[in-house]
Length: 147
Ligand SMILES: [Zn+2]
Image (cartoon, rainbow, N blue to C red; front, side):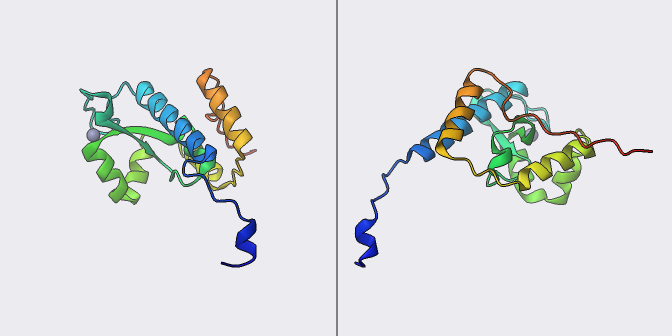
């Protein structure tokens, strides 16, 4: 034990931050799957049970700025979800078959931004999402190029 470790408080097993992130994940997953009618967006298979289809993140959920953005979510069944994780470039091209390049690029840029979400931010975000506010879905459009 070092002198410094005496001043550290042990982390609680279930952190408030962790619980908020889970609540946001769960809510986003429901919203994305509801939006898609619990139908796999790739093959069209409709879920018998709601959990037969998964909420897949187009840009990795390790990026918090797009983690709870419904535009970054797509509903996939088990097989297509596995495909999405392995397909790489093919997955990107599939997304671009139904999403505009401008929207894709804007989402990518948003995913690269640093969220810096503090607990209070997560609380506000969850509060807004529970009320059905469009808190995360706005992706700034790429401004049209001037002629
Ligand atoms: Zn499928």
